[in-house]
Image: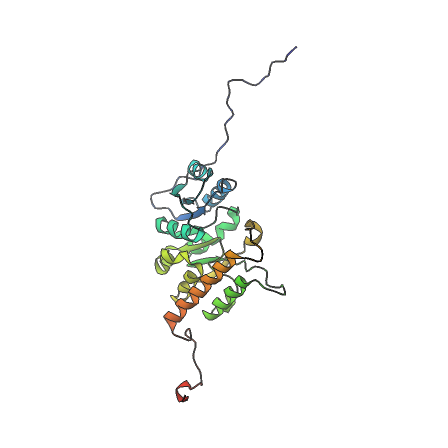
Length: 269
C-alpha cells in the first residue's frame, strides 16, 4: 500500500533570495566588484558588501564570464556592467570607479567572501574623513627566510614614498576604500595599476591610512602556478616598477630625496 505524501504536489520550491537594499538617487557608498566566473561566491560577496551602509549601490563588473555570475548579480539587485572579454580585476575596478556615485567607494573582489563587519570600518574611515584611502593592513608573511618579491616591492615603494610606516600595506591588496576626492585626484584610469595609484595618492597629499586587517591570504583562493613560474607575481612586480618610474618622472632622478653633501658637479671625466 502506497502512502500519500503530505506535501502539496503542485507546490514549487523557490530559493529564498536576499536582495541588495534599494539605494537613493545619490548613494553614500558605492561597492565595486570585478567578477569572472564567480557564481560560487558572488551572492555572498554582494550580500555582505551591500550591508556596509543603508544607502549603498553595488556595481558588479562581469567580464569574460561563461557561468551564471551575471544572472546572480542582477538577481541580487546589483548594477551589472558586462564585458564579454576578460579584463582583469584592476581594469574592472577602474571601470566600476568611473560609474560609482558614492562619497565612499569600496572595492572588493568577487572570488572571496569578506564579512560586513570587516568591510564596514573601511567605509566609515572614508565617510568620517579619517582617510581618503582606507587600506587593508594585511602585509603578508614577512618572517620567512625568503620573503616573496611582491612583499619586498611593496616595502620598497613605501620607503621611496617616505612612508616606511606603511610597510607592505598598499592599494595592491583588497578590500580597500577610496573617497570621491581620492578617485578624482588619482584618476580612475590609474587604478588599473594599483601601485601607481598608491604612489599618486601619497605624492598628491591624500590621507592614506591602514584601517582594517583582513587576512587576504587566507580568504583569497589560491591561483595556479606553473613549474617555477609566478605570472601574477611578475605582473605585480612590473606594476611596482611602473610606479617607481612615475615617482622619478614626477620628483626627479632621486625621487625627491636630497643629495646632502655629495657634490657631483665637481667630478671631471
